[in-house]
Image (cartoon, rainbow, N blue to C red; front, side, top):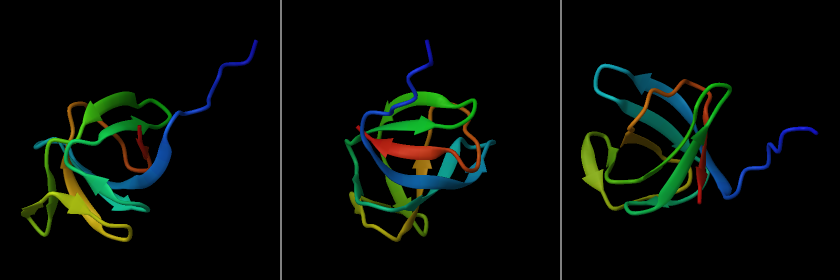
Length: 88
């Protein structure tokens, strides 16, 4: 039986950079994201969920980021460039 690869939630962005030393991802947003949203990060080896605890744009904290912006997001696990981000 084939594995179910359907992801619940809406794709809201892609990881464009990852700073492994500080655990921060740069996400190019395709939709709005707010502090408190639950997200899933999925890639060829990445697959985990977390709540958004803080968002930064140009090193300044913001509560909401809009489509088209690039944001910094603290992540709980190692991720990879090209991983996709879904809002649950």
